[in-house]
Image 1 (cartoon, rainbow, N blue to C red):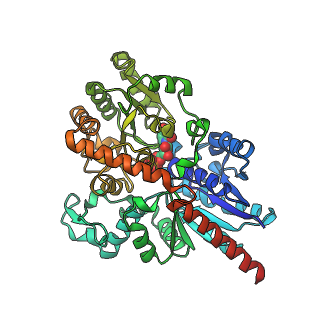
Image 2 (cartoon, rainbow, N blue to C red):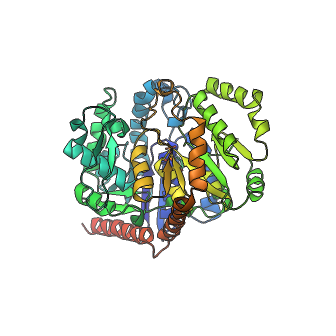
Image 3 (cartoon, helix red, strand yellow):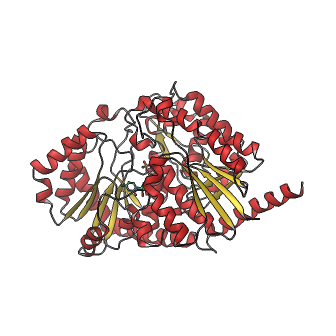
Length: 494
Ligand code: UDP
């Protein structure tokens, strides 16, 4: 009998996009059917991709589109993804709405043939543990992070290391990383959001932790060679199997799949390619701070002026917190003549960028990133040195991996996060002169810069092999499929 995987993502681009890729990876295996749970607004962003996977590539991926109960929980209409959430205060309602997907999903699974064989659910959706138990099937948790950051957080919590420093900016060593040669230090301010008490979400987080502990395994968008021994160690402390199946973005080989990954881009493919093709190999700096960037306009202006002063070709993905800030920035871009001054040398993408298509182009030679895990592994996969500007979540830990362990990036030098809701308080953290300086270090940087670029290239080659059938992730995927098959057969015999 075919295996039927049910994938339940968190509706945030950084979690949903890798799960869509994962759906493709699984459906490519023999006799595997995948159901991907989504909502109408989210589906509108990627259903063309799924149709292509079905009708052009012959993959059995089906969308289960469940209405998102915005009105019932008091969210604005069509607020179905974290990138459309207007305020931090609505986060709890968003999670409440996610909880309400359980019933319609279970109803679908009861009536659907073939029955489910395995659930892969985002770590935020703790109720999937009840669903999996009801259907007597294995449940795997998807984190959307690296093993390095998960293991670091686990060890800091275990040893309570952050309680022994006198203030938020004092450095302390991350314990429990004996397999990493050097000591890695962090400050309390830079720890992921999970270390910050949030009275309105703490009960939700407790449930998430419980569901993670009771899961049958963990799947990761990573590859073992990247994690420097952290997979084994994380597996040991969690007492469960950790399956690295990445870099998942590499499943997108056709140009349209690369172009439309995750959303409809705010630029034409032809315009992008024509512009990139005019540039020298490895000469362009690509700037994108993720799907949730809410920096204040004055900070965005500093980035723009830094890019202009760098005198290098650049692609700048401009995103704003809300309509007001967008208008403010738009006014600056036009009225102050920025767009006119950088015409030809700078390509601005206002909205959604076709990130992996851009990163895969030979003209791109540097990536200024917020160190979101997907962006990190995507930059690494294409052998591009990174400029790191962590903003929130576990991004400061990812920066440590990039700069201090893998040595494929340069820090822009931010010391504190910009958390959702606190953007105005943070103000300008990086001045234009620093933007110019790090671009120079990343794109040139003398002997050290050359070594960094060589390391990035080597790592890119390893990344691109990982998903091959005989690569480390390819092997993990086969083992995972075999495990679920064995579970299904033993259930049939029982
Ligand atoms: N992304 C994209 N275009 C954009 C912004 C983001 O394709 O304009 C993709 C990016 O390639 C990555 C994901 O969205 O796969 C963002 O995930 P990440 O973990 O890097 O950061 P987050 O947005 O979750 O902070």
